[in-house]
Length: 413
Image (tube, rainbow, N blue to C red; front, side, top):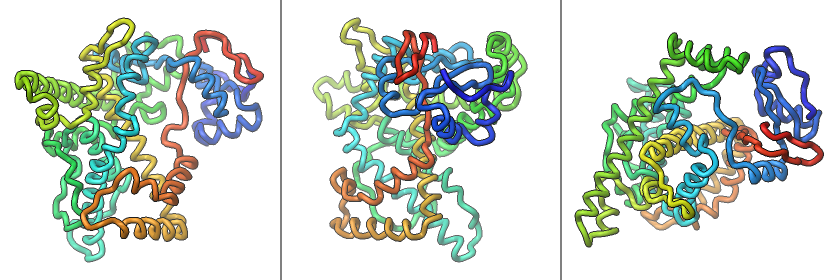
């Protein structure tokens, strides 16, 4: 399989570190074609950079490449049971459990909740902008990426779990467009716990990367055959990034476990209520209609009858929190950055938004039908995703030889 020449020990990592994997993958695609081999340290990967060939690879193998991990005990089990780490029959069961949450009807039902949360963020930003314009005490630079992360985490809480993580508390909020009235969530965590969850999510992504994470991770990239020894050293002599990672994982695991416990308590009370049925479920404290946890707890493999264990459900809750927090926040932050660099795009975008919103009756809420009319807005977001994809790569573990164009990928790749 063709590919760039690796450097001893480091493979192609030095080029990737200097220019980033998206840029290097595009460059190497031009040199070697859509299927080429890249060395991450001493571990080889085959990169597929063609949409049609990617579909073939993804269809033939659902399993992601095994993650090299230093984790032990429950944390390791959670990683291996989530949607990204699950394999074979467990992956199929988990995927089928997730799927209804992303159906067209489900997504349409989330619009009002998302709109409520977005308007909370708008009011927060207005307050801060007012302080800066007036030179008031407390005015300071604003980290828009952090604010967007708060918003996306709040959306995950309300749409998936029916709870308020309290990460968008509106202090000094000003009058703005009212909420949709669809949000029926109750507070489950105090604002301090919400802040801890936000920080844990930030820490998780910062210190699990190779460059910013534990030095033991970088050593393992260079010496993968010594993973067992390096894992023992990492847990016996953890450095600061590894300690931060484990602290973050504990917070996220505690929140995920609490979500399950809360849902089960409410569900138990509903069953005792007998004929109250769905009405009782829709009004239960901390539980929203179409709860993601309800889908997981009801999931069952049609052939084997297998259900998800509590730990496997906790793993999905953790995956949903992390995936919903970072990818969406990154995509929106890059979109806002690009818009700020192109005034002509900003003017056209604002014109479309003002035109469409002005046609809504007083107090009306956004809907799927209304959002479909924001064609230029959709184009702007798609272009931002093309330029700065928040998740530009995924992996597969090939069990059998796979023909991708002119290249035969061997089993075990």
